[in-house]
Image 1: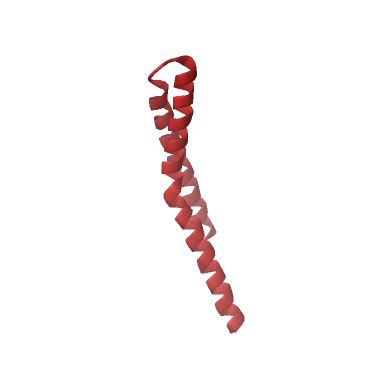
Image 2: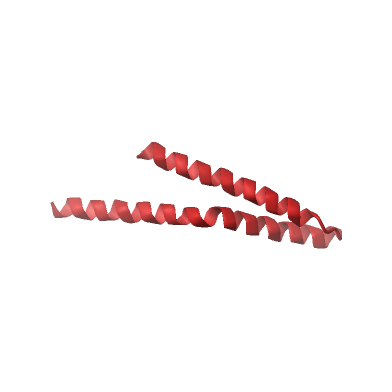
Length: 76
């Protein structure tokens, strides 16, 4: 029985770690889009590409979030 408890603890820790990463997906993608857009703005001497980067980052982050949640629910 001790082996079963260890296995349950390991799977619980794995599940917790997996879902804790979900909280950082969208903000991380938005920040990455902002930084890339700001670099492009600086290089091209524009002032609007960072907004497109933020929007693109939010979309990419949301899509990745949906992929993670649906793949996790398929495995369960």
